[in-house]
Structures are given as structure tokens and as C-alpha cells.
Image (tube, rainbow, N blue to C red; front, side, top):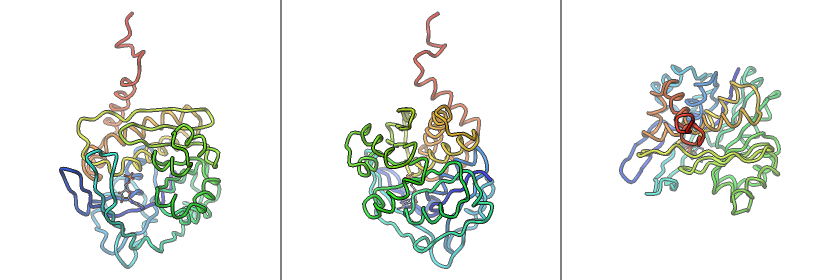
Length: 307
Ligand code: AMP
């Protein structure tokens, strides 16, 4: 058993300044799984309603994502409606319907409880804790969160932070959680709250990692056309955890490579709406952009260093 992910699977309506997708496949656990599966086995835990389309279940199964934990319940599937500003780092949530997710508490299967790697995607800290309680002795536990939980479930979130190894969140959320405007101060303050690693996602500005070994920064891969940033954060987390699980250890070397793989995969997902780009992605594509990424930031690259 590799990675277990608990999060949303649902339908997104996404508006950008130029385009719109209605009820496209989305959800934090969906993006995470579609990225992590490139590195090893992934077991997805979520709930969907009776309206969840069989072709979407097939699409995940065909990519070797274990769906034994995708519970089908009476009612409607989770839905989210978001609109991006011209500055695509900014978006408004126009509508959020938890639907069957509202009272969902998963009961993990025996083999899922024994998994070494757990990702608690963006869901309530209570639900994240209820899942963590069921785990035997995971090697690495990572969690994501958002402004909503920082504002409305702060005590529960603070309790959870003491029990996890890695926290992923965006820059605004890092400021909100720590009460520090400066991101370096915010990152350090978050490490004091429990996690050994904090990954601060900064949209088109890349990712800043804080750990006991210091800071590590990676830019976002510069793209001419960003069509839909939805899911970039979850895709980043999927590739990051996928790499860590495949590597088997959480040292600084592994973390740095994992941050680059996460950024590579996230740079692909934003090229098309919803999950379209990540569905067609091959491992060769991933390796090609990994190399392009290294070249982008390497001032000692052999091609450009004079003899
Ligand atoms: P990201 O762009 O990485 O933050 O992830 C976007 C995905 O998260 C979308 O596919 C949404 O379906 C899902 N999502 C949006 N809001 C929430 C929420 N409050 N709880 C859980 N998942 C959400």
C-alpha cells in the first residue's frame, strides 16, 4: 500500500475571463490522485452521490487509482463554482455545496490503515483528524488547508498541526494562520506549530519550502498561456507525496526533488481546463519538463558555461 488520500471528488464550474467549464470533474483528491499515480499506488477515500458519472469512475480506475474507498451515497456529489480574476492568482468562490460530503466520516479499510503515506486534502480539520485516528503508524502525514478552516475551525486545525509532518497552504493562508505578513516569518512560525515541513504555494511565483534544514525556493514554470489554475495546489501535493513515497525517506534531498516534481506537474495541469491536461500526460512529458525546469534555474548549466 502506497499513499492514501482523503479529500473531495466532485464537479467544478470554472470561469476565467475568457472561458467557462460547467460541471467538469474536479475535487482535491481527484487532482492529487491523478498526479501521485505517476509515482506509485494511490488509494482514494471520498464520497460521491448517485449523480456521479460512471465514466468518471472508469477514468480514475483506468489510471490505477484504487477506488474501493470511494463511497457512493444517496444524494448529490460535491460541487464548487469559482471565478478567476484577470490576475489568475486571485479567485472567488461563487458557490460551494458539500452535498454528500457534509456528514461523511470514512471508515478506512484494514490495508489503508496500515499505509505508510497519508495525504489529508482540503477538508475540515475534524474530518482530517478522524482519518488520522484510524491510521496504524504512517511514516509521513501531510495535510492541506484553506482560509475557511483557519477562520472557522482554528482550534481543531492547531491540534491537527501537532500530529502532521507536512503542511501545504498558499501564501495568504500562511499569513492568516501565523499572523505574520512576512512570508519568512510566517513559515518559521508555522514550523513552531508542529509540522517539520511547510510548503507555501505562491501561484505563478512558485513554492517556498520551510524545514529544519532551512528554506528552498522554486519558481513556477513560466507559461505563456494559463487556461485554468484550478487544482494546481493539489496536483503539486500529489506529485510531491508521490515522489516522497517512491523515495521512501523524507530528507532534504528528497524534499527538494519532490518540490520540483510537484511544480512540474502543476505547470502542466494549468495548461487546460479541469483535469484534461493531466489525463493525457505521459511520464516522458514529466521528465522533459523536469529537465527544462533544472535548466531554467541553473546558472552553471554546461550548455551555457564557457570552457
Ligand atoms: P486548488 O485549485 O488546488 O485549490 O483545488 C481546487 C479543487 O478543490 C477544486 O477541484 C474544487 O473542487 C476543490 N475545492 C474547492 N473548495 C473546496 C473546499 N472548501 N473543500 C474541499 N475542496 C474544495
